[in-house]
Figure 1: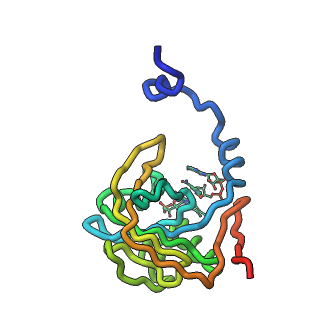
Figure 2: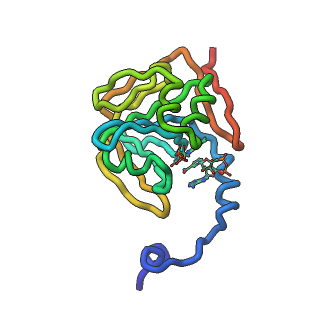
Length: 176
Ligand SMILES: NC(=O)c1ccc[n+]([C@@H]2O[C@H](COP(=O)([O-])OP(=O)(O)OC[C@H]3O[C@@H](n4cnc5c(N)ncnc54)[C@H](O)[C@@H]3O)[C@@H](O)[C@H]2O)c1
Ligand SMILES: Cc1cc2c(cc1C)N(C[C@H](O)[C@H](O)[C@H](O)COP(=O)(O)O)c1[nH]c(=O)[nH]c(=O)c1N2
């Protein structure tokens, strides 16, 4: 007898929770704000992402959830590297630039970018840069989950963090 979870993979059952309930709840799951960038055979692209988290430290691995309907999906699907640039507390404008309908050139023109081990664009004044190789891709619903092995890390200790909570940006400072 297949479990309810297994059954859901086979038939297109109605969702157990409606989308708005889900979004309202998720809007209060505070998260760091990241600009995720890539470059390679598919070209250069970047998007704002809060659905980013640590997976494990053996080997150091993180995941990024990417909506397959977004304009950047095709580029990310053809490259095998990305950089998670975790934004510092003063970079909410850059988050909006990468998080909406701006043309890609305008997104990258708004900041300074350096070179990385993998070739993915590294945001010079980000709080953290996680330069990664994409190792595994899993489709779940409308999104693709990218499991990424971290090739190099650059961390700035003096900046605060940009946090997204309640559909707005907030600044977190390290204790003095
Ligand atoms: N994981 C994602 O794809 C994701 C996460 C955050 C924001 N967004 C995008 O930013 C827009 C603005 O978000 P907002 O927080 O200001 O208000 P909102 O009410 O649209 O979304 C509230 C929260 O629901 C979640 N969410 C929204 N759309 C989602 C999606 N398609 N897939 C997975 N989770 C989703 C996110 O955690 C988001 O912060 C959203 O409509 C969405 O397009 C997408
Ligand atoms: C604060 C915030 C947080 C997120 C987003 C937006 C914003 C404003 N977006 C949406 C994503 O950035 C946007 O759709 C891309 O820029 C793709 O551009 P188009 O919308 O296709 O032009 C987003 N998209 C996604 O696939 N995964 C994510 O985790 C997030 N998180």
